[in-house]
Amino acid sequence: MDATDIIRLLVEAAYLLTVAGSILVVISENQHPFRTLAWVLILTFMPLFGIILYYVLGQGTRQRKYFRSYRAATVDGFPDAPSLAANRPLVAYAWQGIVSLLATAPNAWVLRGSRVEVITSGEEKFNRLAADLSRARHHIHMEYFLFNNDATGRAIKDILMRKAEEGVEVRFIYENIANITVSRRFYEEMGRSGVHVSAFSKLRLSRIRRTVNYRNHRKAVVIDGHTGYIGGMNIGDEYRTDHWRDTHLRIEGQGVYGLQANFLSDWASSGEPLPADLAPYFPPAPPVTDNLLQIASGGPDSPHPTLLHATVGIITASRRYIYIQTPYFLPTESLAEALYSAAVAGVDVRLMVSARSDTRYVDPAARSYYEDLLAAGVRIFEHQSKFIHAKTLVADDYISMIGSTNMDFRSFEASFEMNCYLYDPALASRNKAIFLDDMEGCREVLLSEWERRPMRRRFVESFMRLFVPLM
Image (tube, helix red, strand yellow):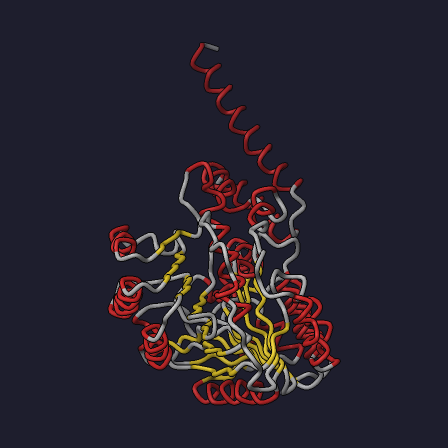
């Protein structure tokens, strides 16, 4: 055996030891068995690529030091939580558990008396947003997962720049990875006009695990502390087309406190200084309606997956119906089991997705869940002409959720999300009507037909399901 053979054997041994060690690390992380199995398969069959991918995307970081420090952003000067505690008992008794669960998230007070409008048209949302931004007198706070450099994005950008030049405080947070195709000149031009611009995650090689895998998926606007927006719509031309169907909220009043508090926490956590006096950012908001709502955020900085627990809690607490819309349905085991259990118990469970999403490899993985859901009694509707980008649920003519959270692993485990939970019969009726209207463009998936799909499709669905925890 010559020196070349010895070197080759040493390299192969080191390679095998590295792969075996990586697999042991994956197993020792004690992640969900489904997720662990997916990583073991990738490391076994694509070891070099798998090792790199696992370092960037795979390691669980919930509760680690980096994210604990992220959550430490100051909240001094925010509204006095005890003064808002009187609102909690006003929520119907059946949903008090959800209130308490969400209250474990930062700044998730029950807020009373807001005027809330549900918006389902991108054209309406952007027209209303542009008008509200133009009326700003003190400050504008904005964060979006996607802020496209297209006609819609440039129009909103121009308003932000103009208001900054007028002396209005404008703070803008953008998601670094999602907007990587947007030129830095786009943001630099905003900065030169006086807009305070911050990337949610600073893109550094030493922090690539955090900046690549953990993204700010929130979409929120606060104007002068009294008007806010939250929901599923990003900033882009696609929302003005007939193909995209999304849902957003416009809020006036005390409900904006929740948006403001979460934005300022994100601003501080992005490394930016907070104003010395926060009182002007929380102007008095006397109740003008009987509306009750909670703004709750979640992400890898949370000790527990609060938004997942809330979704499961709402499903299991429902007694009559629960209707869900989501662009991507890749449920965790607990979410899938909750849907099965509710349907078997006689609850009218309906799930609406698109016949074709904007991410084609997700579709077969999502459909791998259909058969068990259908057998349990869940009704599944696929919209034939529109991409359902809305992230909503409504249950029992009382509780609704509208926000940024998809029904998938990434939203519940890896992304920074923010939802609005509404305890309001009138708004529940409105959201139920929206769902029923959307059903007119859907085709219901029937178990008898689904069981006859070709074996090739079954295999593709089952194969793609292996990678659900990584999507």
